[in-house]
Length: 80
Image (cartoon, rainbow, N blue to C red; front, side, top):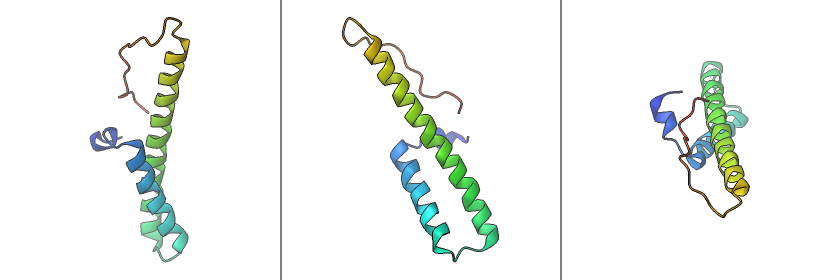
């Protein structure tokens, strides 16, 4: 992933992905553009999946804390 992708929020990545899907479903995209959009959509999907997995892991960390909320360093910049 590119450096700018690491800063892309889940909501922004999802909105971009939805826009790509809508334009692809419209059926008026030339084949070359369609392939580029598919590739970009795949990258955005991976970003969304990574952000969701990170959130899930953080929630599990919080749930496993038996003494209340324990704040530990949580690295969200892992490789997808």
